[in-house]
Length: 220
Image 1 (cartoon, rainbow, N blue to C red):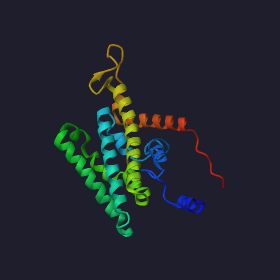
Image 2 (cartoon, rainbow, N blue to C red; image 1 turned 45 degrees about the vertical axis):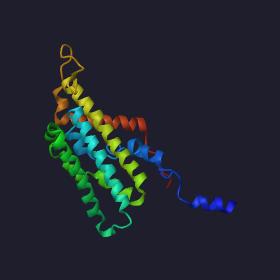
Image 3 (cartoon, rainbow, N blue to C red; image 1 turned 30 degrees about the horizontal axis):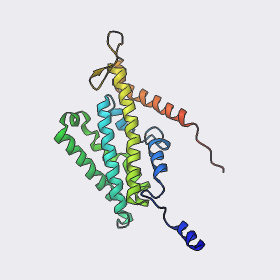
């Protein structure tokens, strides 16, 4: 019986996410947040976050693409030749980006025009390709889906915070509702312009790092 227990310890962990669920969620959303910690995907964070609505849709796009890409890269990881794996990953990413882009054009045309080319640029987003390469190629489908969702949610949260702060300070409104009345608040137009994006992102990264604390130095 003891030998059987010892051999069981060598088997893969039980559970839907193979014992990696909590750490995978924590890494994607907080510990290694794609924007605030790894400083990836900054282009879209700066370009589309002048309104909260834009930020939410862009975040939803990345969540959808990350989940779909991680799932299919994981499913095909044992049959995809190593020498063409990146071509296959780009093809998978492009498929999900096109699906989301066509959905926007069909059901949310105004938002599609506002986001312009930035949905299409998800194809070259380092976050999606990075998770496919670093995680989905080495893990089973369910935990890969969770990793894609966690990183997409981490990205979406940062975009939502930046979009909220820029729209609020820049216009006094949030998604069409007046929050800061113009009777006592003068909108700061800088926040809806490109420099405002850099300022908001810089402050957010500083806050994340202050909360997270300094990195522990590994013993040499």
